[in-house]
Length: 139
Image (cartoon, rainbow, N blue to C red; front, side):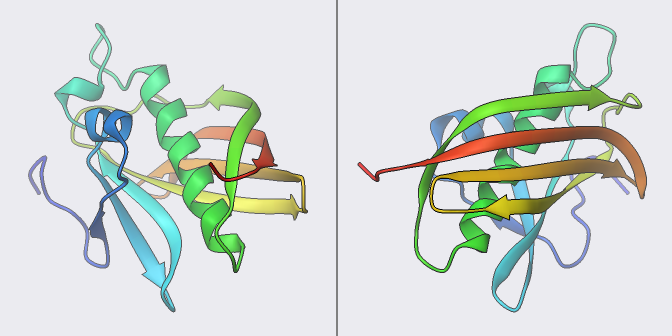
């Protein structure tokens, strides 16, 4: 497998975001038409000076995954902002790793969403995050 291979079942995700264009490319897996997993192949531009995934890269992957999961959770389109996000770095990821992000929504209401995210490489947990989001009026 080379650094650009994408596992079967994942398709390129157009995030319509200038920042995400810089931090991707991102891929998603869908089940019954709904987003379930966010994936990314780590490349050189995702690394820090010691040649492992930059912590900001992992936090950005998680934040994007949270957003996709929240959008998939609600039947109608919603807008939201991150209120807080706590991160735990478990194992370093390296160039060429395929990272998958899975989100669990613990509570989603009319004003707030509480969720957690796990990043894995080959099924091994490398990073965890928990976050709170505020639903806001769409602009």
